Image (cartoon, rainbow, N blue to C red; front, side, top):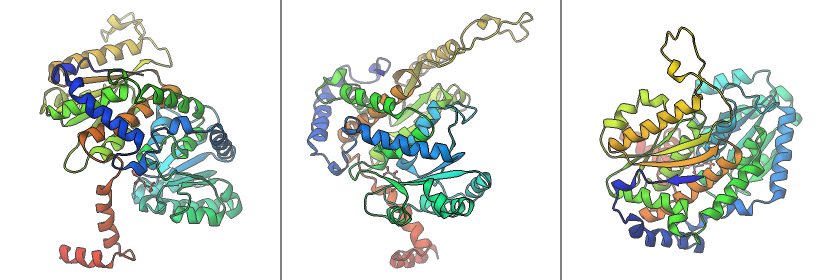
Amino acid sequence: MKIDISKANAFVEADFMKTFEPQVKAAQEALEAGTCEGNDFLGWLHLPSSITPELLAELNATAQVLRDNCEAVVVAGIGGSYLGARMVIDALSNSFGWLQPSNAPRILFAGNNIGEDYLTELMGYLKGVKFGVINISKSGTTTETAITFRLLKKMCEDQRGKDEAKKVIVAITDAKKGAARTTADKEGYKSFIIPDNVGGRFSVLTPVGLLPIAVAGFDIEALVKGAQDMEKECDSSVACEKNPAAVYAAIRNALYQSGKKIEIMANYQPKLHNLGEWWKQLYGESEGKDGKGIFPASVDLTTDLHSMGQWIQDGERTIFETVISVENPNTTLEVPADEENLDGLNFLAGKRIDEVNKMAELGTQLAHVDGGVPNLKVSIEKLDEYNIGQLIYFFEKGCGISGLVLGVNPFNQPGVEAYKKNMFALLNKPGYEAESAAIQKRLK
Ligand code: PA5
């Protein structure tokens, strides 16, 4: 993985790296020493190098049980409890089928919304299908996930019988607290622990991400190896200008200070749509607080050049973009020649589709830079487990440093509680009587 900031340099002071180096170094030292705000959530920092072969073997063995016994596996989780798995599985799967690699059950995601139609249709799809559930919730009490799990647990038990259902329901939750832990222990489900010191959005390299990815048939050892290698490349001992996470954190903050308040993650591979979703949560929830923070947005290109392209090229000049560039496709396809050339496309005949895509990428980069949009390019060689593992750790480390340089606690999310408090009050949840009374008064 490489980061190229040469197309953003013109938008910041020439010696911005020198200006930011002391803050970046201080952030890295605080992370290492555990002296920064949010220091009880630093378990992600050296997570890749601490993953044991025994844990990977246990995850693969559990994945095999689900693979052997299920046509579909529903991953129930929200936010950090599903976006990482979804991102990796989407990036590595065949775009038009879920039987790739062969014999993998279809992975479905639920518990991330409260859509009645969505849940009804999910259950309609699962009728008569041998399905299992991975119930993921660190708190074990998240409403969206809990409602979904209640529905799926009952359905799974009704279809398979309680004893058989137990074999295909796995819980990933806190070691001791929360309803998901109570249920898992009482029912005797296989369970994995989310470490206390790893927050949801940093948890893809724990069982939260690794189990669903293994069930989908992907190589979690290679994913972890990519993250381990990136952990070394981003280590605090590596000089700032050579450390990809430090460079990314510094240039983002320099651009933010120069008025670039929105960062758009752009990809040129449809399979990377959910990388944008995962990254938006990572950076949005980590940095958007205390009235500060770059707003993370994402686009799929070239698709969205035909919808958002105008705005990016010509709208308010408060944006910069970070492009995820995949150097080599995993397949080969050329534009065919056509004798009649009715569509006038013969100038492309014999060219790889990827060459056309790369020229679109380059042409867009030049146009955007000309239009006042600084461009950061993050390149990986190809879409595989190893390269995705590298991206994961790079973005996590970049986020930790960047948030500290911004001057916020990147590891909490107090703002997420506001809607929950109101929702519970409106639904008369026990314990919310005072809030209920206050909100009813407000709504009169
Ligand atoms: O990053 C976070 O902490 C959040 O997005 C959580 O992952 C999300 O709210 C789900 O929480 P839980 O895993 O407790 O159900």
